[in-house]
Length: 200
Image (cartoon, rainbow, N blue to C red; front, side, top):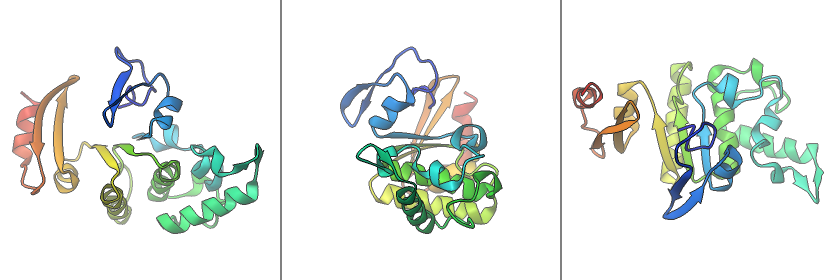
């Protein structure tokens, strides 16, 4: 997934996005192509922890806070306040540093920044790792709402129950190869079927 996003080396850089061939050499090109990546390690790769919530929310959409080439802190704060409310992020204000947020709220900040960037394809790598049950439910709700809004969601998870519960289609990969594919529209794919593919 990091290679698709242009963050890791790949043998092939050209991919198809909605039937259009694009070459992605770096994450900036991926963002321009409407692709987002929520990394599995939000603290190291998804957030700038020492920064407050506001710049973390707007970092992928600089034109939301820049007008006529001039950065506006006031504009940034307004954008951040709206996203905090929309995503139900529990923070004292948009000025609170991300390092002091709970794991679930940190994850919601990462999701919110991609919502602001208006990505069409959202790659979510272990989106519920290290967060409490209540926050997991909120993340699942957001994922379903994004899918209902027409966003393409690619979710990677090591939790079989999570995969079974939220996916419409399940793809099993092993050592870089696609080894199984299931239609999960009726949520009836079993763990045994998935594991059988994974272990060959």
